[in-house]
Length: 183
Ligand code: HEC
Image 1 (cartoon, rainbow, N blue to C red):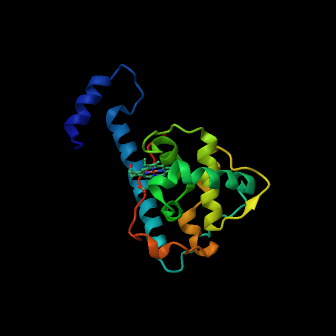
Image 2 (cartoon, protein in one colour):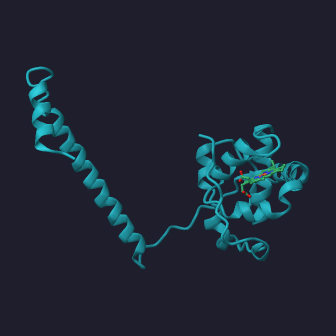
């Protein structure tokens, strides 16, 4: 805790040395102020989130991948992933908050018998295939290995807009995806 003795002793200590005029105490108070300010902002956001009138913007949907890329993923999936995951991977993918998390986990830890052993393009191809299965639209460009692009693809929030419900009955709706284990 912040006690006056911790302040005074530090102040005494630093007097006449660095001379920034604030000492440890001032810094602690400044830190506290910033903390309180951000806590207040967080609280305000929480209240806003709970208010029924607060509108969550719809997720972006763009033509992020190409059909040729999804075709490659569709060919690779059965042999590289399907042996262990069956068709459930489509449902698993659809429950991720964003595609970047799926990509980081898959490219870091999968296939389980060869973690991270595939070329990056293969993971992107399979991701494009899963996106197509969910109903995301295809376009002229391939899905890039880009953190910022993958973060904008939000499978879970897009389920309804895409009319995706195909595997609902086959999969545990309580499934929580693991957190990606790569930076
Ligand atoms: C040899 C079996 C095996 C293969 C092949 C395999 N996986 Fe997995 N996968 C697992 C196991 C077991 C888990 C659960 C362990 C864990 O969560 O760390 C898992 C978990 C996952 C998860 C997290 C969601 C979940 O169900 O827990 C993803 C995403 C995933 N795998 C993607 C892939 C992809 C993509 C491929 C193909 C490139 C692949 N896996 C190939 C065995 C496999």
